Length: 591
Image 1 (cartoon, rainbow, N blue to C red):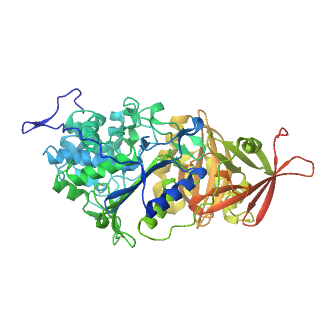
Image 2: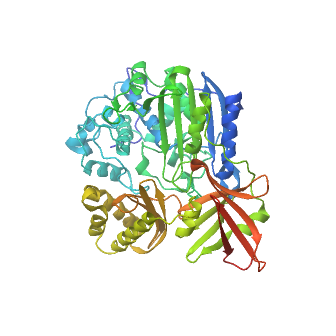
Image 3: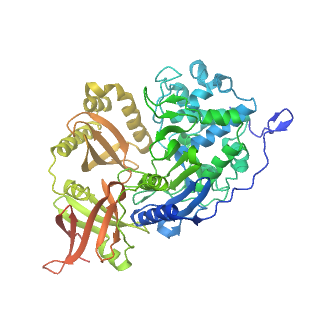
């Protein structure tokens, strides 16, 4: 597929290698009331787990550029504006630019079949076009063909895409498919004759001045400081420690800073990267997401109208392991919001989402959502009194965990989960029904996997059976057979219920979340690997009055915590939610 060590391509006597641009200077700055308001909101989120970078441009001028929180929690390494963070699906913009540079040189065609360059795909997939890949209209199935690190090499990835049947005829409707951007990167390699990362460095990162950008697997060789990725208190490490992840090839494999993302936008707009025709095509609203939808898709951009900011071009990126970010562009005012984060919270929400809505409101002169409580970090003495397990009720426990930067309050067992979920007095038949269904499903997976999922999906969901079986068999292939499982608790979420179960495979434990429709009484509606082992995990800090608080910013949910002495002089933990107080006693007598 790829011609290694090939010379630079030459077109009309000119090499593809551009001059290296000087990086666009983006100083660290907080200038003016809007910038101060966004800055204060971002800083207030740090004690509760947020870490990342924020860059706000107003009327064409950067007014805020700051970093917040920690890059490596266990070592207390602060995050800086020069620390690279995985930008997940924002990487698709990089892939689109790379392909369009080849289009501009006449080496690729937007509307010609890609089989000329990737014959391994066969005639059906070979008839797909670059335009269809860039707009998610190639008919490829949504979701992922394998879990992270599930592809051995490039050939394994190509084979998996070639063998996956199309979900619909090419040309529309729209469906987000990571495999389409896998193909974009493979196409760039096939046409250029070199490794995708090397091509990006010369053709995108260098001319745009993206000095802290690289592919995951190239970051260590480039000597870049890369933040660790976090799922609540779980440290996932960084690409410096990981094998190459072919699943995200072209679709989510770039690390960069917020300033690098800004430099990419500047380079696109200035003509340093793309011809006027290619730039126009990138920002054309090619297809609505659904029939009659006002949101449409360009090349790696969503486009819609906002009451606050008029026309908006936006693309976020969210990797299951923790990396995430977003870029908003408001053409009418030449304004932008760029936010990165290296963390997810316990509920699976990427922490940049804690901030982005408020930043949008503030940029456009509107009121943000509720402000986080004013707090300060816990001192070491208080932390030592908390960390460990506490009995809340028979079979239910509270635990405090220290990750090197934050103290996390977690719960296991239904009473504990209800307490930390803000519903301490709830006796919900839906969570009980969903728990029973989850227990039956996982118990049946020790036997006939096909029958287990058929029973859970019912007639209305059996069309999705192949996807569930592929996911499950992927787990078993990676981690060995299932040995045991334990139900951690269920959460009511609108018309659905979500049950967390710890699965103990031969080689690994993971927490699987299962969604059950009709308030927990209906069929299986989804599964995913939960962001942390516990159904609920909230960061704890100290209020100005000396009390403790655990807080979830996305839901504005709080748990007030008091440490007292019981009648027997033993420590007593009192947790108050929505006016209801529950007591917990330490599992260890050493406190």
